[in-house]
Length: 155
Image (spheres, rainbow, N blue to C red):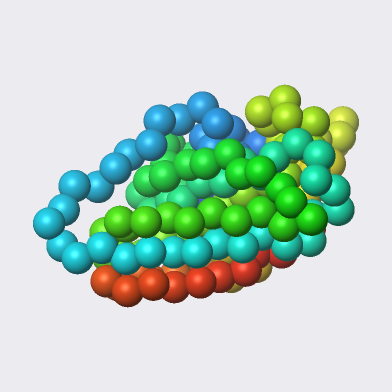
């Protein structure tokens, strides 16, 4: 299920974002089983203002982009303001990455009293939503049986 803009308008930006990011930590990965050739995705996260904490990242397909599980998830260390994630043996398909810089390592995206995120976050394609997370189509990329590299800027 994709959260549509009308649904987002009924919730605060931070509440929707927190729900989406909660699955990065709480939901178990959903691994696709396939004999199809696999690909590799190399993710580089930039724009991190410190090496404190870690980056919590999730790889999703369209079916679980709204927060109901992940294809893969990782907690990434930060070095010199950059985090890296190598996702290997990934079945061909369309995916999106979402992540946040968990600066205090408390396992959640911190928000202010209005629900606005207080920790940097990012999505593949550097997609940005206007009143919550971007739609899956904005953050989506396709993996074939080869390698692909991307850079995500946390803001």
